[in-house]
Image (cartoon, rainbow, N blue to C red; front, side, top):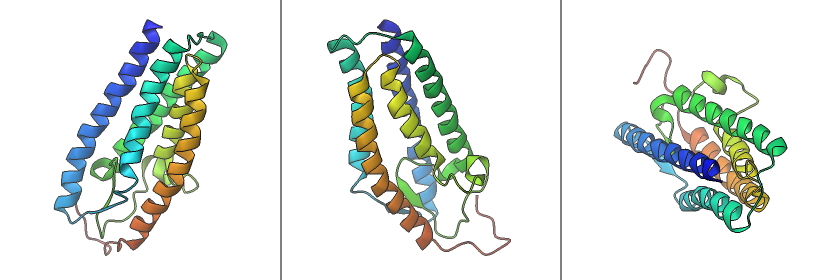
Length: 180
């Protein structure tokens, strides 16, 4: 169990690193006229992601869930892959990546990294969904996995609608103009 606690704590530390980057990027976006949308659902996202980490530890520990290597190892691979996809998204979006919906009017859509795949419009949310299901299952916390997946799906409907509306309301930048 101690290795699983370490894994969950590492994911938690990664989330804290994301928040540091998000705050820096929010300052960048707001200094360029960025508009924040979806403030109402954001606290629910924070609660859900915090609950995921707590649920992993509580269910694995209190319910004495066994670690089943045949399930745990593939789930650990999915956790690692989801982290890789998440950081690919963060790097591709650069200053525009954030945990909140902040759109700088006039900037064109990002079309590099995983965002060049037109059919996968929100790759970061794929990473979140995979990690949210896989992390609990690394140590058999299936109630946490199911609960997070259901609640995250409902929240993603709200989040993606919010994000799409915010992106569609942003006026594209004229050709040849570059903002850094």
